[in-house]
Image 1 (cartoon, rainbow, N blue to C red):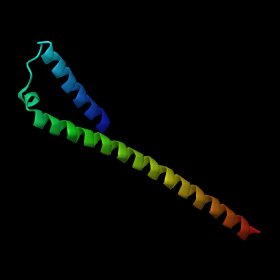
Image 2 (cartoon, rainbow, N blue to C red):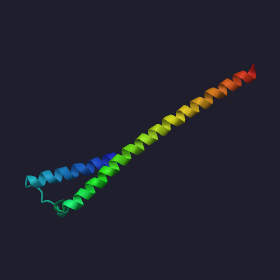
Image 3 (spheres, helix red, strand yellow):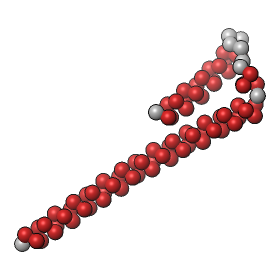
Length: 85
């Protein structure tokens, strides 16, 4: 959900800049302060990168836990088979 919100934020900025360049919309004061706008864009970029890293970590953790469960389950079956014979 975070990625969708961040992409929405970028879309809003682009559309406001386009509307201002066409004379449809007055450019907000924050868009005229280049350092502040750059700071906002950089923080959003970092948040997008962190959300992708978090997604990859969660997917890897899920895969690792599934492999661990599979290994434990298979060894349990092997031990039960050998104890029964």
